[in-house]
Length: 116
Image (cartoon, rainbow, N blue to C red):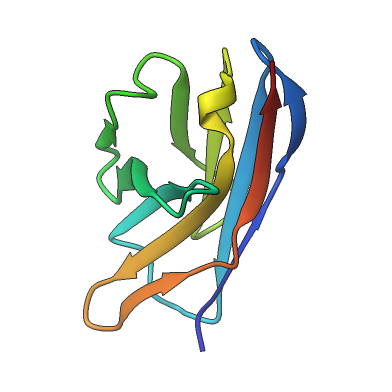
């Protein structure tokens, strides 16, 4: 069974940085895409960024230029470097992994809180 685990959330002041990590285990397959999404306290879910197996990246307009998604050193890992954080970035951040032929798997989320 594929398991996805996020880490690295926390409390930071506006303008600060955080680095989130995501690791997927329980599969011998490499990911086709790994994605970060977030859900605010108002239960609004927003796509944040995606990294494909070929290395292509895509970002939501709200984080473009501030966030960077990258492949981790280990298999099926991804990181999200978040700079110039704003209070509006406060949310629970979720990582998901798409494995073609198997499905999409989600982690439990990690809380990011940005104080003004």
